[in-house]
Image 1 (spheres, rainbow, N blue to C red):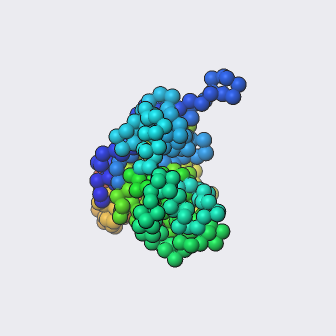
Image 2: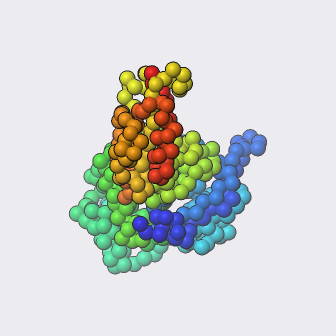
Image 3: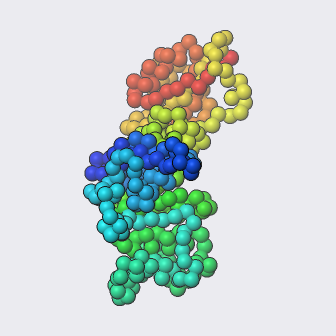
Length: 355
């Protein structure tokens, strides 16, 4: 794992005690879209910012690229305080910040080549230099043979690839992706995410993904920040947040994305009250260096405790194994089993009881 993935790299984007308040249309108190946000994005990372509609994600993006200024606090990009810049220096800073959008924002009257060249033309770059820089970018995104095609002749995934190439044309340090895969089908989404991962790896570019889709974060992000009500409620490396979510909002996002779903017949039999139950239903989360250890075999051999496997899944998050098992075992030996399992670095949770 690279240092950026673990958060050890220096922050290239930083929000410090940031509040952004918008005035009410009638001149009232208004509302705070962001409240006391502290966030550091390590250089070279792929950081996912996830939240529902209205959580403050779009406002955060607009603060990073200088389209909005914080009411309170500081926003810095590559060591420069964004909100302190005048219009000229701000335009210069924005060239270090690439942007890709949900709906592509391509000019229909320009070819793929000319759409990618647009920011360079605006910056006054000569035609020969434009050709030198645009052709390799189209090749990088797999569209060298589509340079002369217009947007109407391209698929949704190809349009997004043009958008990515255009965002890279000014050689930015940071790439902002604002719901860039939301309008794409699952296969195309995977292709675009793989491309962003390649861009991050080969160009050393910091990528900030704004999304409401946890599978997108799981696919490529090295770090994640979860937003709710204008605040960052949980953040950390993706593996830690996914495997041991601490906040209710994070857990809600993760339902159906990680772990397993219990069979319907079992859910119908389960109760939250131990009462006269004979067995407990226990979820075991496998993470870290012991993620692939034969814990149930060891449990049965050491404690002579029969365990019934009800459901299970193993997947990979940030190139590390992550697994979940749901088992049932004798209620009278529940705590003994949990102590044995947790002593080996695994997490457990009692999901319910069955008679």
